[in-house]
Structures are given as C-alpha cells and as structure tokens.
Amino acid sequence: MKKDFSKMTGAEKSAYLLLCLGEETTAEVFKELKDEEIRWISSYMRNVDHVPADLARQVVDHYRKTQMDYAGLFVDGGEFINNAISSTGDPKRVESLLEDLNSEFDGKPLETISMMEPRMVADLLKNEHPQTIALILSTQKADHTGNVLEYLPEDLRSDVVYRIARIEKVSPEVIHQIEEALQREIGGFVKKDQHHVGGVDKVVEILTRMEKGLEQEILSGIEDVDADTAEVIRNSLVTFEDLHRIDNRGMQKILREIQNDTLTLALKTAPENIREKIYENISERAAEMVAEDLEALGPVKLSDVERAQQGIVKVALRLEEEGQLVLPGKGQETLV
Image 1: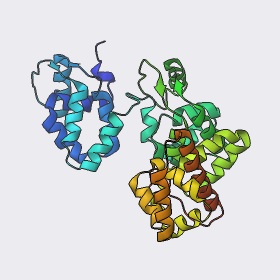
Image 2: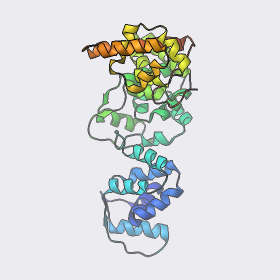
Image 3: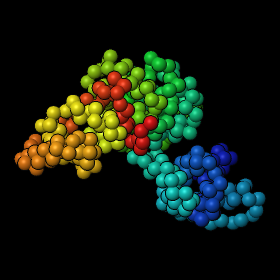
C-alpha cells in the first residue's frame, strides 16, 4: 500500500527520514532524543523493508529543504534500528530500549499506553470492564502497570490484578477488539499468533514494583475471591533462593522455627549462597550437623525438597506479616 506523505504523522516522517540518512546519523540523532521519542519513532521503523524513491524525496525535501533525488532504499528495519540504538552509547539506556523493542510481545499492541502518564492511563481505563483493563495492562511493562494500578479505585485494583494472574494467552481477535474499542486513544500492531501477556509471573513483577504495603492490600482482595490463586502469588513473590538477601537477624528468626530435618531436606538442591547464609546464622555445631546429615542424605523426591523449601518460605512470609522482618521482593536488589 502506497504511503500518502500528506497523511503521515511527524513521528512517521521522522522514521522514514532517519532510514534515508543511515544508521550512524540515526544514532547521533537518538542521543539527543528522549527515550519515549525513540520508542515512538522506532515503532514505525521496525516494520519498514522498503522506502520508495518518491517518498524518500518528499521526506528529505520536507525536512532539509533541499532538492535531493534519493533512490529507493531497501532496508532490514529490525536490524537497522537495533544497530542504531546499540550505537547510542549509554549501556543501560541501550539495554532498556532494546528490551522494549525486542520484547517477547513483538510489536505489542497499545504502544501509546506505555508512553502515557500512569494517571492518564488510569483515567482512560477506570470505567472499562475489569477484564478489559487486565488485558490492556498485561501487555505493559510491570513497573508501568504497577504505577497505573496505584491510580485506579481501591476496589478495582485487586479485581484487575486477579484477572491478570488468570490470563495465559490472548488471541489476536481479542486484541483486535480491544484496539478497535480504544482506537482513538491508543494504537498498536497485532502479531498473528497467541500472545503470552499475563499470568502469575506477570503479577509478581507488578507487585514487586508497587509501593510497599499495596501488594498486601491487593492480595487480601484476591484472597476473598480465590484463596488458591492468592496463595500461589504470595509464594511466588518470594522464592527460597531470594532468602539469601534477608539480613542476618531476619534469617535467625526464620531458622528458629525450622526443624533440622526440614532444613536438611530444603538444602538438598539449594545454591551455595543459600547454604552459606544459613550456616552463618546457626551455631557452628548445628551447621556441622546439618552438613553431615546433608552429605549422608540419599536420593529424595524433588517434590519433597520443594515442599520443604516452600515451608521455610511460608514461615518467612508469616513473620513478615507479623512485622518481625522485611523480605526481599522478587527482582529487588536491596532491602529497605
């Protein structure tokens, strides 16, 4: 389909101009742009495989005010934009931009939502059906979704998060219906297969990026509707491997409630940093006994090991609810 230059948006014209000017020039331009501007322009670049000569001339004439006779350009839009972003310099910025560009939800729909202020998104969605809100927010990055949830009415948050947890795949038809309903406000592109957009892992990412305390409020609301799902989410918020980041005082409180046989079984598949954390928070004699029991422990079922580990995590979660310690959330680097 031939592009009508007069109907192209500014971002789309910028995308075609940069494709004409090449990767090095694009990299230099990107250094001066805001991240949301790069994402917006990149969304047009990524699907381009040919820039017709007449369009190239129109774009160049419009922006550079010169008479330049460009030939048509054949490009790999995906490779082009990856190379351009990779050349912008700041490694963290490059990683963030490429993560957005090359995410699992390739060409994700509703891209504009990701660039809107969270309060604006909440205002846009608050009157929609909770399932529609859940579908839309499940396509967004976890931190953005968490920020949007904070502006939704309190009674709506838990319902939306619960529905996100129950999502596994969404058909293109459903995404298309959502896009059509919100076409004037938001847009995007639909990939022609099933999309992984929700689930418990998504909810864990969202909750660990929200303000401290809100996650328990949301989980309590989910528990009223589906106690099993709430428990799965709680257990996923902190894994056995996360416990190595608890401070020593908190670890000691946990270990006081754990029997040696449970501890030994839990350590059967534990990484070295967990073992060291536990050994340094029990007496030297107790550490020696557990190490000896562990060495003498024969083959065991993986399910039994996981059950023992989950039992320790449950103790930790209970102690946190009682205010006796602070647990690291999944994906968090430090305790506060």
